[in-house]
Length: 429
View 1: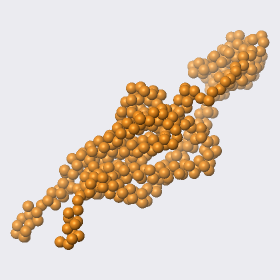
View 2 (view 1 turned 180 degrees about the vertical axis):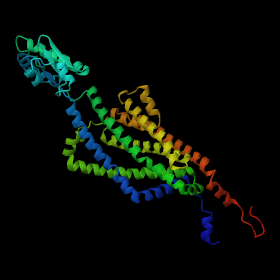
View 3 (view 1 turned 90 degrees about the horizontal axis):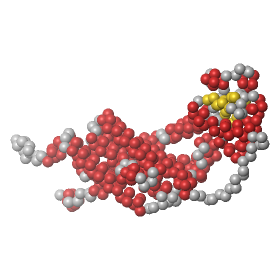
View 4 (view 1 turned 90 degrees about the vertical axis):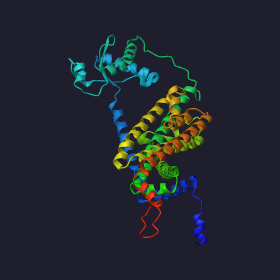
């Protein structure tokens, strides 16, 4: 035996951290320099473009479909008086008043029937005012009647006044902000951050499952498990896919920043979203972004550890799809739970969302937007890290129980332990 062989023979086995680093580096480079990763980066661009166009078109259609026009089908004098009252009160009441339009069919038809006209779905009126100023009658659906009966009554009363009705001018004294307005505006930031965190987690966490299933089908995972601890294999795969996810987010972020820098005015015109008007979170933008990155990492590791556990239980791609569907639906319900608790700070439901590991990153990110307290984030991150370790440990134990103790890997290890025969006549042990 040469000195090199002897040193190799007595070389200690890799520690768990070293083994996890080897697996993470191997998977990270293998995925990052694959051709499929390029198409993966391009994939989300098409849903974003289609979603943006659909949202802008849908918003425009909705704005055009929801009408605030109320038709006037009274006498010519009453119509004119009601229009004049609307013009007098509009500067003070603004959008609380309907847009009044005379119904041409009522002017040309002495026997005009407003109810039949509305039921025939003619025109685009929310309701029609008939009768007289002293006894106006509003014709429309139940919802529109509840919405416009008060404003129409106010306009008719103003039109009946002997003198033009005027409202006292209100002196205005503006303040920079208030507790109620500040919290209501920060809720927008919390909701947007939660939505972005959820979409990125669900979009990227599936890579962990696909990578494990592929290596499990090729028996690579069994070879790795025979050489290094299974905990290290799972942890290495999790952090490798997390690193790949950060690369993808970085590419998408740079692309979004470039698009915003070039055509921000067009994006605002199409979507109605202005990034500059987004309310600042309670902890400030720099710390909020750092917490967003950390909570994404935790949400990804938690969901990825669950997917690894599913991969340990599944033997075929069909089984993976069947087992992963409940987890995906559960994650969707978890997101709804965290989103619902935004407006209930300090409630038992919010504390439950923070305590449950899968919803904790979403709930805590929203809390960072609404509350400047920092020690709660340290406690939540420590709890989430413990949950990741527990899930990885459970998944590795389940994998060894279901895979390594049955099938080719177990037989292969037993075969390595057999002593070879000394001669051709002696049977092997």
